[in-house]
Amino acid sequence: MSERGVGVERRVTGARRRVRHLALGTRDRAARLTATPRRWLQPVTDVTSAAAVAVAVVALVAGVVGWRLGWRELVLGFWLGLVLLAVCALFVLGRHQLSARFDLGRDRVVVGERANGAIFVTNGSRRRSLPVTVELPVGRASAAFHIPSMRIGDEREELFAIPTHRRAIIPVGPVLSVRSDPFALFRREQPLTREHDLYVHPRTVRLESSATGLIRDLEGQTVRKLSDSDVAFHALRPYVPGDDRRYIHWKSSARTGTLMVRQFEETRRSHLLVALSTRLDDYASDDEFEVAVSVAGSLGVQCLGEGQTLSGSTSTRRLRTPTVQQWLDQLSGVDYEPTSPRLSELVRRLVREVSGASVAVLVCGALVDPTEIRRARRFLPIDVRTIVVQARPGAQSQIHPMGDVDVAVLGNLDDLPTTMRRLAT
Image (cartoon, rainbow, N blue to C red; front, side, top):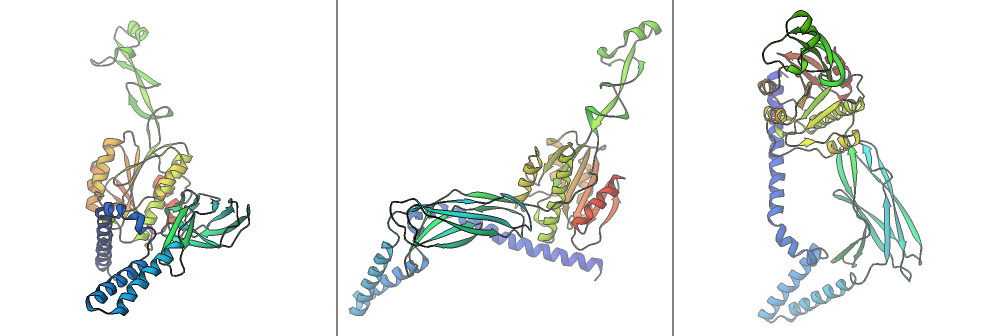
């Protein structure tokens, strides 16, 4: 297929994903609009199933029709429906007898690893417990465990494993004790523990050398750039109106008869700026986005591990960068952001918020066109080295210059060390 055909196919894929994202956004807006009435009805809806609502509606219709037409059979059906609902409601009454705790083992794993844990259920009541079902919500799914009757003080252990196929912050728990009737018309849940978060970190690769740059620093290395104020002395020069009088060297001035001032060499250290685009239109697939997040994670881990300064941001918010763990925790929850600006707008915002960056790495998808990259570069200071990493799974990894911007197309995350080594030379 020609390059033009591939481009059209990728844009069609991007349009299809935007439509899906719009549908999900509509669903979320509908949920927000109905939040208040759902909160009012929550005490009833929490224990009532759709089957119970159906039985109530059928019984009510049968009663009305039977009363209007004089059909005793339908009236009898109405009363039978009410009795069924009343009897089933008795199954969810009463207090729960169990207590529980659960242990995740590790609350931070890398995508693809299995997170193992255990639930410990104890009968802390003064009598033998009845059989009960215990459920553990994991994200949108749930795992159920049947707990048989236990004597006073008995404890039962149930093991579980959580698959982590995708990067995410997965809410685990709380452990629920569930009461239900034989017809599953009513269901009552009681939380026995608190909810915990499982952080599924993006996959990262070790880099031999991160993208480094230079800014002024008291403990840095001197460079061949002269400055009027620093700590690395270079030479003396004649005084020029406007120079700071604190740097006048009086002994040399007295010896030469001309005012002389000290001149310094700037000292600098590394400061890496990582800007991750979370704009849906920049990516042709979810795999591209995952590779982009892994690239940002790998750069941040290497930078922080070397003791360098790191500034990170998505399209709409700054990321905290005190430690490697917090950096990866935040990337675990990064997702497409509906109101994300274009890459150039992201860079313009970061220039106002971050000062002193020596290298800027812009991480984005394959749908960002060269015009947008050039526009983003214009907002960065001229002395900031700019690298654009475009995630494109399956493509051949390559580097090509675009003016003073190095554009790296990354076909596989494992190619990132080689790519960064080439960029560093």
